[in-house]
Length: 117
Image (cartoon, rainbow, N blue to C red):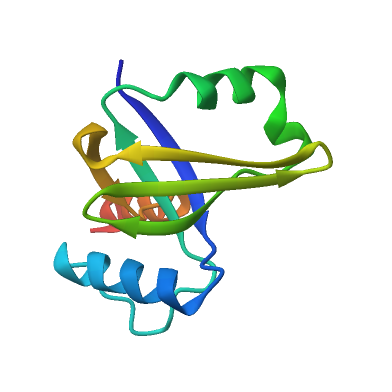
């Protein structure tokens, strides 16, 4: 089942930042104003079981959501830190259908603008 995972880009070290920027540039995503406050929607063919289990258990009530700590041609590494400890999850590249940064307010703005035309 296709699922969308929304995660904030949170690159801990320069190596992850370099790898992630190289990957994003390779797929045509460039960010001239930097990578701060960027959220990615990752559409996956099959959501990893652990992600759905954590969501169903209420992890996002405790902590806002997943952080992306690395993106590469191999896949995407996610990280979450909460009072119970740290956790990582890896989404292999073959499971990724699409990656975007489109948020609801952007879509709503386009919809509203289209109504005035």
